[in-house]
Length: 173
Image (cartoon, rainbow, N blue to C red; front, top):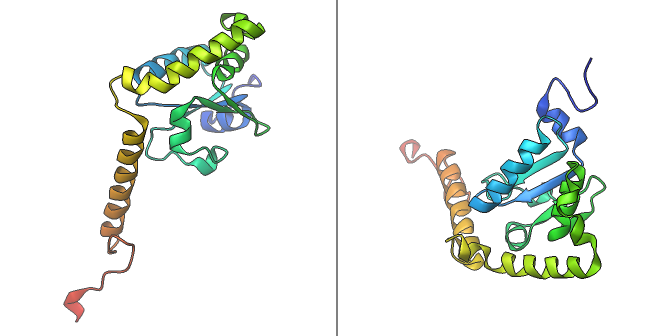
């Protein structure tokens, strides 16, 4: 007999049963380490839908319109009802969902929570530099350039110019 959290198709189970959709930077070594820990705690339950914002196929439209730059600035998560959660609250809720909320429980005390939020804000502002990746503006510009190059390559492969217009077959002329 299948448990309520299992399904023959794990992708379908993940889409139907997640309690929080965690947007994370898959190019950040510290973020990936945290996500790997969370994935180990989630196991096959599918309680967390992990979305790598650094992936080429990341789509803001699938994630409450949260664009790459916004998602890179601060950690975000979505709840099934569409509510957007940010900053330390993402960790509080994610850990609670996994049954290990005691790790962040102290941050629910107002004074401690304000300090934790402030410290996270400092970390978020400098995490790219601290992990040797440069600044947010440069990363966003590089991503836009990469996306433009991918689109140009797709257009070229489909017989289109860089702007998407059809390239006439000169041999026919």
